Length: 168
Ligand SMILES: [Cu+2]
Image (cartoon, rainbow, N blue to C red; front, side, top):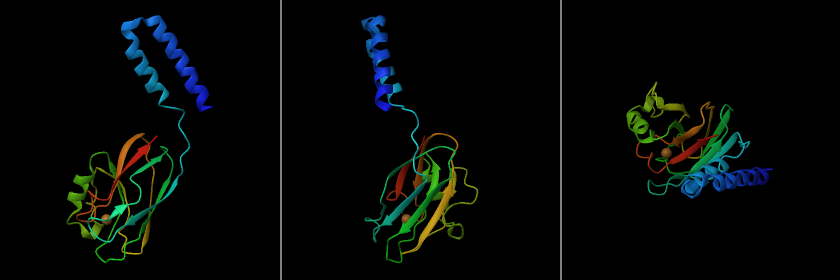
């Protein structure tokens, strides 16, 4: 099905190029490529297990740094803290793209709210903290397609534990 769509786009792109003359060729081809890169929205999973790995600040990470979901669906993130060092406390916080560092720094002193400032406008959803060996879940849904981020806001972790969330 996808192949057929691509082929159709390619053919229409080709005709546009043929009719448009040489000076428009590049633009037309670019447009055709852009259109072809957006196939009918795929059905993505709604449940994801994300492992927080590592036992030291340099080693710690989420085992995945990119997740794609569909807009308007209830998504469940299960965060499995695989650490066994007591300093390895983690959460997972969904934020608007580019706000991971700001959200983490606003949450630095907010231990009582799991290192997320209450009412932070850049936060879409935030899990509780999970200690070593613990699992926590976060449910959320996002209506607007686009790019978002997920991040651990435990002090000092945001730059190592950061991923891209694509909403289609
Ligand atoms: Cu963390």
